[in-house]
Image 1 (cartoon, rainbow, N blue to C red):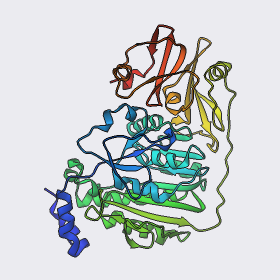
Image 2: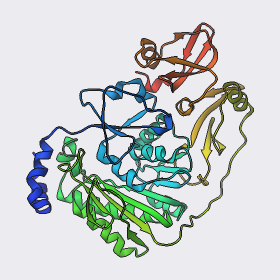
Image 3: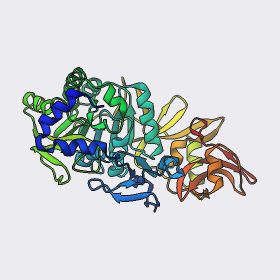
Length: 429
């Protein structure tokens, strides 16, 4: 049962469209996934259906299937993401080589979508203020094989002070009352109240204030929510624009959505296959001239150099960083991290143990080429055994990239007879 106060407001908002809106909430929701271009060629899968119109990598899938259990999901070949949630990153329109900030990034749907559009070029800062959600975000960045992302766990105000005017594009997918998720999540209904809407609107104003400081002159700011409340959408953005004359709405090509004002777009469940969403596209006035910051790096250890040579691994432009015993490859454009809580400073390569290099799981998920691979079909019992952590027979010796359908999924180490399993214990099935 939907809250009566919510229904009364929606009737006033929609007028003649209100019955169609109510009817749409009774229909089964459409489920979608988004393929990961960082993994290369898109596979043909029998459960994938028609394309999501606003996202080239997005597709609806058979709701009776369970794609989260397919080995390709663990290999980062696709991300399960509601179709309307793909709209914000689509309108952000990130470009390879740019600096992008996803300010409220967990669990990682929009961050991984942005990373795919960047094609491994440029710098992506993905932030989440809640520690547990930041760890989930970091795990999804790892699973999708993203090398050029910094994952932080801090508040927007700290980032605004540290990196003012540093980013070409900033996405604020703001925490909201979740009215657009009523059909998807029962908790969104039970947690709703007018007081929650007002509290969210206040918090959204604070996040917008901080996030806007990260945008360089000439840069784009995209604000999105998954709620219908004007207080959290049009009114929140209009209040921000009144206080910030250096920003203005920006119309973009978005024929699939309902334009309510210049730069403001609504996604209604009775007008498309997806849940409720709102997106505002803003531009900061001026000529594009992002700030620059000092970048510091270290020398790669000889153990890595030997390991990489043996397996034919070449890294993209960047620099080495060590966090404790772990070695990372930081992307170009990633500035100094002093004063930040960092979950993942780029691509984790591995660590040196007793004079030997032990590769990280993240490296296996990023790699597309390796001189030693062991392929198992995604339908095979062997890949199922591997994901359970079992050893497998092999004729190969040394570190080996385990692949399924040609996609890297983890590491194994052979001795000519047995492939020792190095799939992380914490994610084994």
